[in-house]
Length: 541
Image (tube, rainbow, N blue to C red):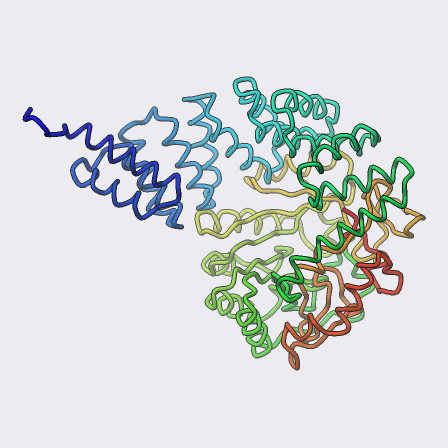
């Protein structure tokens, strides 16, 4: 070897080290340039291909990233990092079964791989596979007891399984391994409040607030704790601070919402038992295309990037031009999410849905057989709906459209929830959220009655306080006729009407007198004169 000539392997290593450092610091173009120099001379260099895939994923190109990760695995099939990064990429592509397989393979090759275990835990969370989460994260914590993210995920899973004593033990072990970790101490405090131990919770929260005095979530928990300990005055003062903190980001954006809820169809073909249909004043009407175009124009003009096709009343796929309207909104650059009961579909309509480029489709379904489903979704047919559910799930795989099931379980017993989850898993549905019914803005009696607030709710309102309504702060609802409501989720009869988009802009509506009166009532903590809000359990967090 001639003096002064750097061997090719050494030069490649130096370039890749530099590229990795640039990638870590966010200098993606520089990282890509260095990697491509290596790959120009060694096209199958595994480390270079892996890093180029990471760059592609970081700049929003998951398809070429997936191809690069596959090439790496072809060269080095036993490299855990390659399977991990491919799994992350497949999650981005919504190919969730393949993602799980890749992440599991990474853990088979390296059981101590922190990234793979955390990513897999996060993937299993929306599928509500909490037992699997506990198993995987327990294995990781046995090898990395100071991994705070693993402890938090494991404790969350244990709490969802109602194994509160185990969750508490997990939190305490995590605190011992990571003293002073704010998220762990805050989460333990929340659990202690649920268990009635407000005194120890308050000690933990005061410690966290010493380092983050304006953290709204911690202030809220402290307000609950001191209230449980009998100091209502301090509790009220803390809740006032929480409300002010919740308002600040809304005021910074000029009261503009971050998303809109749009009622394309007022008509619904079902009478679900958890819904507020008993109070509907009518069951007909659809939004005209010209009005929908006005809504899209307003969203674009005000920088509102997310549109939810969802309302307190109405099945959107009963609109005769639903696909054209959705296609128009997506084409204008909006992230469009749709909620459906899944009944007005054929195989052809499902195929068309899969090609729209929607951000998310949520299918409302709960049950495991004809009786359990049809007794809740009154008017639907179990076999037909399950057929649509399975077809839609298959059609949306790999399209980039997230698909999930929201199961509102009227019977909230653990046995009922478990049977519903098991059935959905059996038919291949891996993203399921099971929730208890809410009270639809006070229009449905659910759970138990809380005399102090005159509210029916499944929530333990004795351990919660009313703050600002996050739904009202972040969104507005637009009815099929152009009227605008402060509550796009539950207001079916325009009781919270704040304007009309056919005559006003979104900015004018949100800065108008009627919306201002609702905000002022929440700021003062007295919504007795605000319809629906006074009986709603959503603002109790």
